[in-house]
Image (cartoon, rainbow, N blue to C red):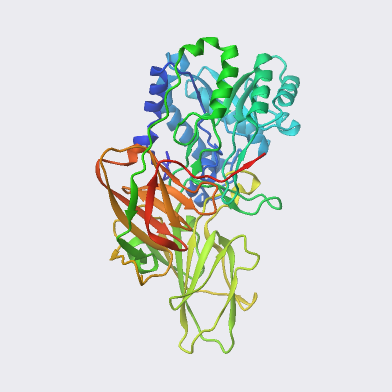
Length: 538
């Protein structure tokens, strides 16, 4: 987000790092800055920009020359924003973390040493630290001289700190990421751990003088296309994270108090009794604004020219990254020659979901998890046009497969069970940065002449903006509020409503737009005052 193109930095709006740190300072808070370059956070590609793939010789998270050239440029620019707020300049930034969970990926100590040098060269004279996972092998990974090692873990806190104390006996012990909740994966119910047991663990480590930071203390939203994914074969198939980053945190996605917050607060007060002087703020008010009717619709296939930012011809399929595209959709079109027999075709290297249509008729929908994304074409004597629309559902953000993250059709379309590749493609980049050029049609409640995926649009009048939740009757898709892409919605859960914070709304008319990918059962959506989630106990 801060460097959407090589060398082009953006610190406007929600990306204003200096403003955020300054606000922390005004509130009397100290800052432990974690600029990466890899951050994980269930964020698309772990925070890396997709354009890294276009750098020749690129290898991530190591002392690789092309990678380090981009990392140094990024870090120096980020730290330039932070430098006025360093503790040695009288500011609140007391510590800077280099990398994140690196022991779960590699062991290039020279790489970590170079990151440390970049931070020091920026003028920072405070604490430099690392944060690594909760197994013996990870904790004992080597770190540069003078770097404070801290722990990230969700359970068995005392055991983790015992191991840390063995490898780092003369330093304070800190859990810099205590996972009080976990990222929400598509179709997987939200996990609730026993908060009484968690509170006992918290009390035990604080009684030993250890420090702890809750991750997450405040749940949130990985808005837009920013949610990542997991793919760690053979344990995990490709599974996207949902847009909600509520993660069963102490404060939920809307910033409201939870039972977990109240219980943990009592534990913290034992060791910091002065905090009792601060009152607990009330939850924000929520409002059910009611239904918004979708009065306009538009088929995505009918608006390819309007939505496309780039069209290229290629003898073979290209990826999003090849076209300089980071997120959204990509469309492939080719002419299929007639055959004397039904022709089997298979997408090789699909990332992540594809819609196949022959002369405008949908043949099937396939995903990268499918064992055989194959169908049979009956091609007429004059040939036919094959269209393939591919959705980027989020790049892997954790694990060794993070380098295998290109989107679209990464290899090609295979004909006749491995006999040959199909050549000759017209490829359109559809990043969905804006919906302004869509050719809308009036939506009637009967006989909609469309095929999915399809856009729907409607307006609702609001007297006073307020936090709210949008409930959509579709299967899965994307939602925009007043032109801002809030994120994905999914009937598979675990979050069945989309949190809409008050600042996205305005007094008067508000526009709601969705891209429904499968089927919309009702030409409306509803603003409600409570979230709906799917839970399971653990």
